[in-house]
Length: 472
Ligand code: FAD
Ligand code: 2HG
Ligand code: ZN
Image (tube, rainbow, N blue to C red; front, side, top):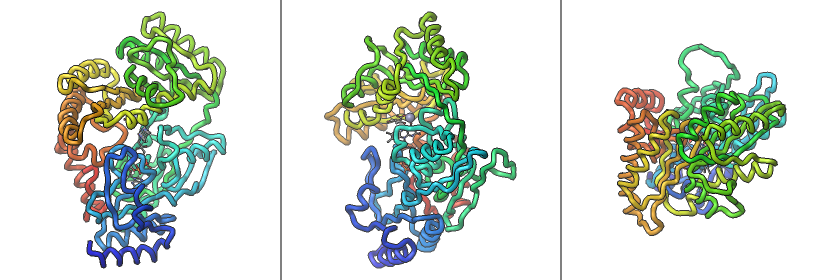
């Protein structure tokens, strides 16, 4: 874009959103031009921050008329580079962070309607204010937005009980690529009036439109929790324990998170104020949580189930949390892994999903294949075992340069993702495709699936202005 064209665009945007809605200064723009991991960097003529849906529609219409590409950004906590503009300097960043109103709460219908820029933790607070519960829970909940959660179909630690974001959304309001607004903010549990349009936008990573409003499903507030940390000798045993816990505890089993000894050690080394929960380190660990609206028998159920698992030889060490402070300390160990990895150096990340029954066999084979390819690899394997979702990350030696990282990323991705595919898994479980997996996607999805996705994109965004270079 020429300098004059850029200035004309900025002037017109200024007329639409006012000075509070525009960032043109390099220092003010900086946080919007790189991601949480510091992996991607981009440039933009302007960060535009509309205050509401009408302003968003006007901005998108202007961008459509001027053929200006848009990168929508929420809390910028994504891990696949989806919210970072490219380096061309031609892509406008549209930040949703000023759209942060709770629009309506209906405790009878069990729904919460929010602007897309509402921070996830604020959605939790809003639900709690009417004695209801919104279950989506992830380490970034203090800064990610509900719109970003929908756009990435975020998962997190309660999917086992409540499902992914897709299962928690009843309605959407979306500004389409030509600036029209789709008013789909329905709070209905049943609505068979044709194609599931909202389903198209969930997980679309900003490539089909800008989500501006969301109707979320609410649940009864669980008032009782029982939490334990367990150690196991093998992943097979942990998977069997998961099965036992599901059979014994049913819906009360809310979280079943796994981390290897190496993942736990990383947190203990890198995050202050943490200590090992078990006296003897175990090769595989699980953080297990039960929850219910009724305290009666919950702790006993956890204790009895874990007693049974010890008798069956599935676990060799168990620590039951005795207080809320202890529970928080256990969760700090689990949630501290991402930050600990960043401190420990460069990591080659794999966010993969497998059938739960194949996890142990996959991990055994992947360990051999990765070490054969990179003998000095430090595998940091952890994740949401209850959903079959592993964060199978590989830490690079501290002295590895950018070229080595690039080469090894390519090799390791090939090894890990081919094995994932052989086991019937997914190479992108919960973080989204973004820039990270875009080129690999076409290697692992069938030509039919790719063609259908491209046709949908072409039909909805024929000028390819919504988040170009991401996902497809
Ligand atoms: P952004 O990062 O701003 O954007 C992500 C993508 O969504 C981009 O493609 C962007 O264009 C698009 N987008 C954002 N808002 C909109 C909108 N309103 N309309 C259209 N498109 C939009 N993820 C999990 O799934 N599970 C986890 O357990 C988890 N844990 C995390 C822990 C940490 C410490 C961190 C840093 C991240 C974690 N994440 C996790 C990843 C991240 O938090 C989620 O992907 C989250 O949903 C992103 O929300 P956001 O608002 O930050 O989106
Ligand atoms: C988690 O489960 C997040 O903690 C982040 O999804 C995973 O850092 C990662 O690889
Ligand atoms: Zn995760």
